Image 1 (tube, rainbow, N blue to C red):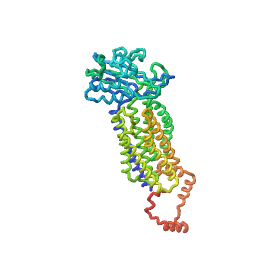
Image 2: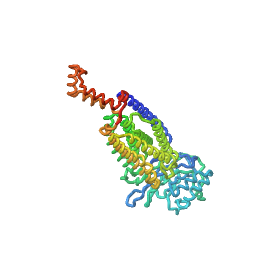
Image 3: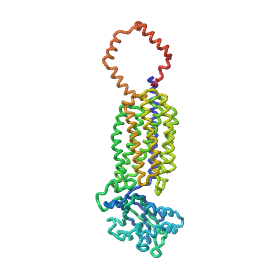
Image 4: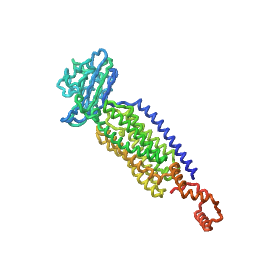
Length: 535
């Protein structure tokens, strides 16, 4: 019996080692891939634009609803300069979605002179222009580059420009928060004909632009709102709340893992630690973002990587427990099928993340679950949930131990909630504005994951799990056995037996008869004593 358990334990340890190496290799490859393809989203952007590029989209930024009693208007301010001479001016456009879609859609017209006319057709008679349309009520455009050391020529009131900068847009909307789209295009308006033309002169423009929700000329702006786009506001508080939850949960689970060194406990601890590390990385990013408007984008990507790994690892653990591994059976059945399904889910999850960052046009107001990889992962998750339920039901049908049945009931209920929440919230998010959708998905996802980890920590706590775990830690029970062997009555009995050899001929005949009758009635052969009996 002992040799069989040691052999099975070594197999489980070997499989777990392979899993750890797979996760490590997966993490390295994934971080490398993302670091090469990720496009940063910040409140402070800077760079160089060559006018031969014709069009460059800079950012989509959400500005909050204006409170007339507070200084919380949105501001876009910065500098655009050039080294050398430039005969004509390109255009910096700041547009809301109603004007931007037509403007953006016509950028691909092959004839760039015609493209310029089509792009600004809707804007012509609404945007202010001192030379061609001074009756315009909307401040959408700036001629760039601006004169060196001076404000842009479109700034009719230089006192409104943020000090030490060349242009300022003030976003004021008392009805609702709104996304604004900022871009640069190689088009200029002929001051004589007032028609838009293509700027075919090549030049490199250096830009440095800030986007904030609040007045940069006053102090006391809320740091968790000021630098953040409206759809990312309040995320700092979300990360801090879950950090406080995990800062309590993680030490508890580490203590449990030290008390009970079991494969299930170790796998769960690895999943929890990866979730905590991912949360720490994202928290570090948003805290720095609140200070400088840039943050550590690569650290945030690494945090997302660990978050994906933690969820896929948790799913693997749920599937293993549903099949009764280490609870009702020592050997995992259909091992290739289980790991294949887990691997496919992980690959699709990676595909969804990469697709969302590289293939989804930022102009589209959709989230990751409204793409075909998103629908694929939701479908796959639903299929895995059904398979999980069937496997758990099959495992429980062969189980008669009351403690193990209670564990499976609580475990199955909490796991099914964790499986089903994502498809449901993804469907609800279809009806939620993009301004609120990210915060909704982030809050509910972290809440569901945190609740799942809390429940699993409770179910797998050593004082509870020892009632239904197989493959118990040998060292843990060896300590108890050592204490038992050193107890006084055992020592005295040993001494008494060693002083006088026992005569087996003095064994009572009733005892011999009792043993033989029991053996014959139960029909237990010698081979049965080497098999583990599962209760």
